[in-house]
Length: 172
Image 1 (spheres, rainbow, N blue to C red):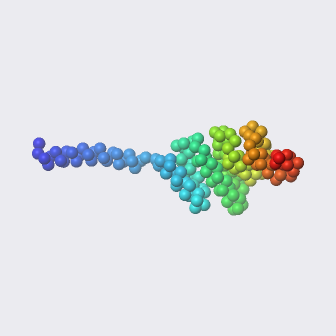
Image 2 (cartoon, rainbow, N blue to C red):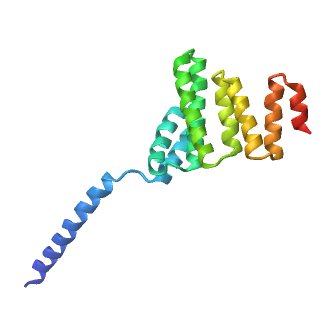
Image 3 (tube, rainbow, N blue to C red):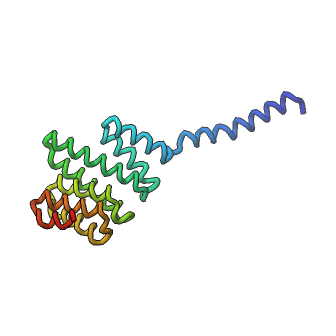
């Protein structure tokens, strides 16, 4: 075999294996960390709806990742706030339902997660479900703690609702 024929055959084999690899690389889904990074950058810019879309894609890859669920919940809460400002209450309530769902999923994974508990209470209050927000704070203080942080949180919730006596008991 002549040298030029061998070179052509080697190049042909290399090209035949490289082309499918390149095609497959173009069809791959984005990596979890890329989606998280892009979603967090969108959040930093205040683009909460596109951020939620990116983070939801990341959720498909790692559905029990608490930090991603937390960011999704925050995005939906912020979108709800904007919908309220636009006087689109129905859309705001739908966004709050999504936010509440994400916070509850976090609490299923990590009961007593204070960030999720506080976020859940905020979303419930924005939705007008004050009694449920208070019940969540009481449950957390009784069943997860009682840590000082959780008791302070419950005391603030009671104080906001005008129950000063029970709030003072929790502050002690």
